[in-house]
Length: 226
Image 1 (cartoon, one colour):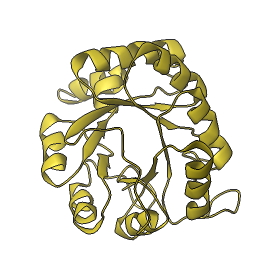
Image 2 (cartoon, helix red, strand yellow):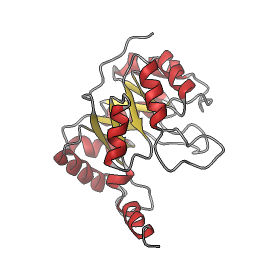
Image 3 (cartoon, one colour):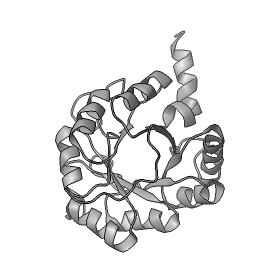
């Protein structure tokens, strides 16, 4: 197996994803930086953020590691940091770790995942987290050189509907099979689910919508009495 760069995340820790869609009143670097500061104050160990503008603003606002992603291109395919150039933008903005699509789908520029990871390691020296959608993709991502493997895309790349809850079983399977940290991510919305992921072997868990999306939180409450 390729060597693993040390992840800037302590074990059994919470990462808060600070992202807002373009339709959200919170969209933009300023609101996301304030959200990151609130997460840091509450005890989060790292922030996941999208795009160089948000990453740069958050890097100025907090002292936490930042997992940078850069969503570009067609959302029907690989769009989470799909190229080395996309990774470079958020690294230069202040990301201390970069996450990219680690699925088995073809990449838009024709390169392989292994080539992208090697280029990021060689040119920038930062750890790479592969966002995967299943067990085989997780194994392949680690073989390609990923320093961390995350379950971010589980449930999002298949033909069926997106499941309601997180894929804790995938966390457990990857944690048992891989020699690198496994990060739980994707539809974690309760403290009990967060704890379940850690107990299943996750090195850390990323929570976003349940913490940083007020619109979704309001809808959950209203849904309880609809």
